[in-house]
Length: 74
Image (cartoon, rainbow, N blue to C red):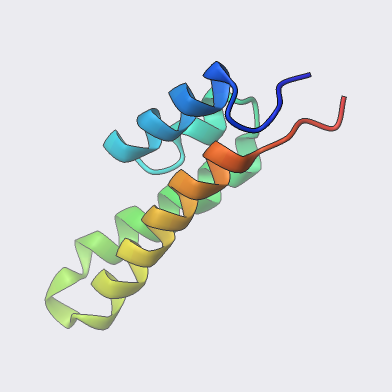
């Protein structure tokens, strides 16, 4: 069981810095990884509309924090 702040969570958070959802994928949470990736990539793709870009940035930050604070249910 990995606790908050464990090496795996730190690695997952660092992965999320480079690509949103990658950290959740490293942790084995496929659905969360897909949701974070779709929202962020879609929002960043529509950056010129401003609001989707802001939403994507907030969700990207949320994905990093989510990976860092994840506790497995094992």
